[in-house]
Each structure stands twice: as C-alpha cells, then as structure tokens.
Amino acid sequence: MKATSRTSLAARILSDAQRFESLKREIVRLDYFSKGTLLQRRMKCGQKQCACHRHPAKRHGPYWECTYKVHNRTVNLRLSPQVTPLYRAAIQQYRKLKSILRRMERLSRSALAHLAQQRLTGAH
Ligand SMILES: [Zn+2]
Image (cartoon, rainbow, N blue to C red; front, side, top):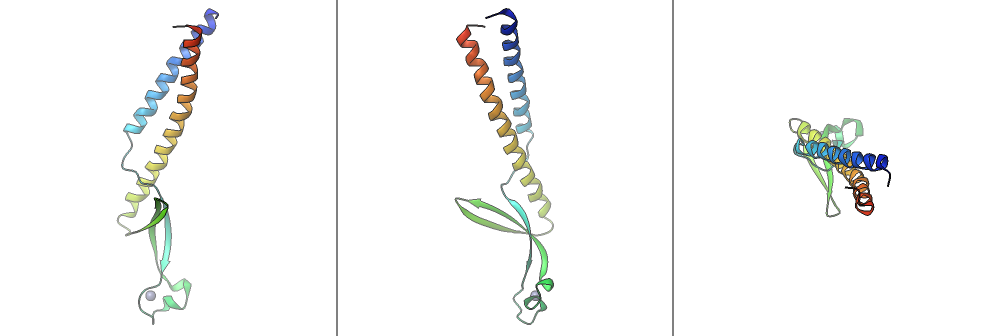
C-alpha cells in the first residue's frame, strides 16, 4: 500500500471516530421521547340532543390525540391542551433519536469497512 493512501485511510478512521462521538453527544442531549403521531379529533358527546350528533361540523373539539403502537396494538392517548406541547416535543425527540441512530448505523458500516481495510493491509 502506498504511503498516501495509508495516510488517507488513517484520516478517514479518525474522522469516522470524531463523527461517531459527535452523534453520541447528540443522543446525550435528547429529552424524553415518545413514539407516535398527533392527530386532531372532533368528538360526539354523550347527549343525544346535542347538535354534534346531527352535524359533523358541530362536533366538539378539536382534541389532540397521541397515537402509537405497542405490541401491534394501537394506543390512543387523549391529550388536554395543556399537555399537548409535551407530547409534541417528545414525538419530535423520538424522530430525532431515530435519525441519529440511522446516521450512526450508516457511519458504523463505513467505519467498520475502513477498520477492516486497515487490518487487512497492516497499516497501523
Ligand atoms: Zn355534543
């Protein structure tokens, strides 16, 4: 192996490690997270006389619901207006976590390939 490519391999291995560390720091900064999506629902109430039973436009709400799956079952969590921002933020954190994990996985694949190449060529 030529000296130049040996240097660039070492540089790549170093940059892989730095990028991996920076993604780890992003995970540490995450806050509580939750799977799911927020949906707006308009509901009918319990009173048969109420206009909500005749006109869909007169239904009550909108209410926010957080919907997610646990063991293939859908969970609908009704949210009051005061707590909706908590769940909105938590869902955002969850998406961020998934995105960081995807990037870490992709980076790990190429980092492992670089390390493997280093071992096979004996470039230390
Ligand atoms: Zn009603």
